[in-house]
Length: 296
Image (tube, rainbow, N blue to C red; front, side):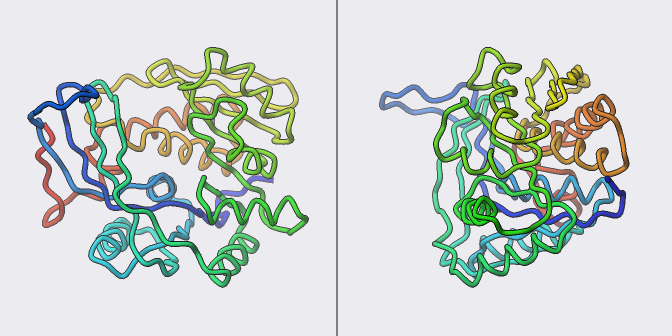
């Protein structure tokens, strides 16, 4: 049964990113292009979910691989300032991206650095934390893969919610996450039929599938056959980074208070506005004495 004081463990990426705003995405030919602005800020799908869960009053801990480099220190400081508890596991380097963005929300992500391989001890500690939590959010990552494979092999633990992002219904890497999950989220970037995609997910075991549709809102399908839809909340978009993670967090937080499916979708749509209205994953990242932005 859902309960508002549930402890949620989030496992997955946290990164330090540079967002570069362009009037158009670069063409695949040699050329020069002027940026409209740029911003260094916190990134990572798991960091975004943790920020928005904390915003909704959920007791959340983020489990992530971080280096002892400057970027790792910035990630930790940003999350700490936003009130998110972090359990950091040793990595040779902190994940970094350069995201080429347009005002329309188009994005090309360049991975500048990825974490080193997690030790067996780090995976054991993460699994132990997810076992004692009331709910586990396991995002796509190498550590996440180890966790879901152990779960599929019979390991006990809290119900898993996972975010498949732009899943196309057949990607091999996503399959163990899908089969281990109680609830799955995705977007419609790789499908023309979100209902069929969600049903194909449910056929592999989850009890609930949710698909975000960008400016068209979101839809959900339960294993029981229940369907629900929600329109996007009107908003003047500042930046699209992290909107899906905010939606996920709003939906999850509402489910913990016993909201029905329609209410959870509505809560997700409202929380997405928080991310869409900010240059950062969440407004708590920005503030006096912190990051200033050139994105305008």
